[in-house]
Image 1 (cartoon, rainbow over the protein chains, first blue to last red):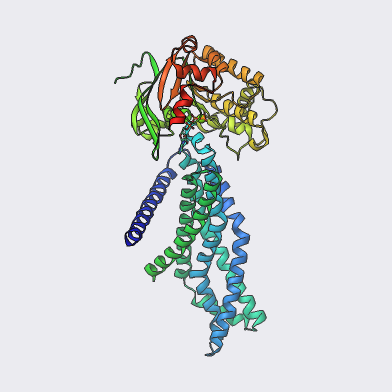
Image 2: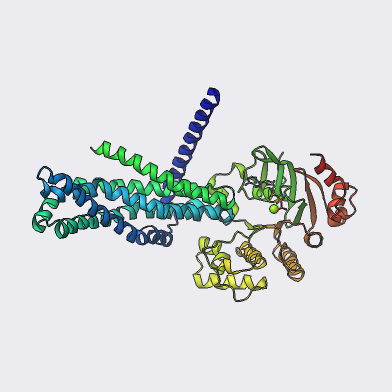
Amino acid sequence: MFKNFFHLIGSRSLAFIEESGKIMMLLSDTVILIFRRPFNLKGIFKQMEEVGVKSIPVVLITGAFTGAVLALQSYTGFKRFNAEAFVGTVVALSVTRELGPVLAGLMVSGRVGSSMAAELGTMQVTEQIDALYTLAVNPVKYLIVPRLLAAFIMMPVLVIFADLIGITGGYIVSVNILGSNPYVYMERTWSYLEFNDIYSGLLKACVFGIIIATVSCYQGFYTQGGAEGVGKATTKAVVLSCLLILIFNYIITALLF
Amino acid sequence: MIPDIEENLIEVHDVHKSFGNKHVLRGINLNVKHGESMVVIGGSGSGKSVLIKCVIAILKPEQGEIYVAGQEIGSLEEKDLYETRKKFGMLFQAGALFDSMKVWENVGFGLLQHSKISKEEVKEIAIEKLNLLGLYHIEDLMPSELSGGMKKRVGLARAIAMEPEILLYDEPTTGLDPIRADSINELIVEMRKKIKVTSITITHDMVSAYKIGDRIAMLYQGKITEVGTPDEIKSSSNAIVQQFIQGKAEGPITQAEAQI
Ligand SMILES: Nc1ncnc2c1ncn2[C@@H]1O[C@H](COP(=O)(O)OP(=O)(O)OP(=O)(O)O)[C@@H](O)[C@H]1O
Ligand SMILES: [Mg+2]
């Protein structure tokens, strides 16, 4: 009984370490290939549209409601010690430092990570990836490089959108519903916001972009076993990218603290 | 063993390949001469597709060497491996068309990637190859809009588009009507004659095997049991070969399967 238990833990840990190693290797291969000619600009733009432009609505809705609910909640709390005037500050700091990047990251891994894993997974099980090899095209360069670059470039852009709309959401709730003074609210928002807050949020966004693209492409690229395999790869891509986003979010915050 | 470059374009030496504990190839030896059309026959699941995937280095054998034009492909640097792959064209058993691209982009994919030819010209070349295979006015369709046999022929058009030295055909005539199948056979024969293509063709179709093969090799239990010209194979005294080419349900192959 105990032996089985330890065996299970042991083999799971080994599998985990092996998988992490493989993901890192795929990432380093991809990064090296970014700089090798020919550059596939068309592919990159196509992915930027896929990852970035098409995610804007989701990210905007997420950002707006997050800012709005944050204003409501912090108003309730701050009112108890007469600090309602600082709602704007709290909304701005929470959104730019934390909620903007994390929530955008989670939404994008659901939307984009799943589609990357499903697309590459289908290509794997239908031998399209093998076909690329036979046509002397490196599939990592052709398929993964544009996705990684697109996620890396577009995540910060999405987070800027999320930040702006999140602050707007907070403003609308505070001013129009809770009756705060619009001038004071904006004053409090901008005067306490430092460059560092925005910068750390954008740094997180870049890292999350890399996580989403690498994990999802890895899961898709190494899919085995038909339609069921594609389904599993998709699930794993989303779950693993979400977990890694939360973990790395803590690590980055702790490092920049 | 030293490869005989003068004589053979492809040499397969004692290749072993397993998946998990399933030992699929158990010491394959096979030589294909310059300009020769080699046909590989064998039962379903015997490892024919695995064998040609090893030849083009999509799969890596655990043991053994494969020489293409004197170079051992398992020991090539990545860059040289991609160069060597440019010598090949491959038709996949299930087509393996890129489903996000139009038919002509599939056929012209190699040209678009590796040559400086303009898009318009690539499209023209693609249409020409498609016509050669009896496919007209489908260049702007998506692969999902094609029938199984059409997909196979588009896959074939993609394989020949770059006019490679070596062609690997995985069941080129399966799933086609007899008339189409015969025209594909003629095409394969013609390419060998006209542009001296060296090829390995996998097939179950004995009519096709006799027609296109200079030599036929039979894969059985992970090894090549017999290689010979179509006439030699027809008159082979090997009971396994005889059962297979005559397509009989009773014989040594089925007996061996029942025992496992
Ligand atoms: N990627 C893979 N992973 C695991 N097993 C595999 C893989 N590819 C092939 N096999 C196994 O190897 C064996 C040989 O497969 P292969 O596709 O070469 O057969 P085949 O001779 O081409 O058969 P058919 O005539 O039906 O196409 C099969 O038992 C198959 O299950
Ligand atoms: Mg096969």
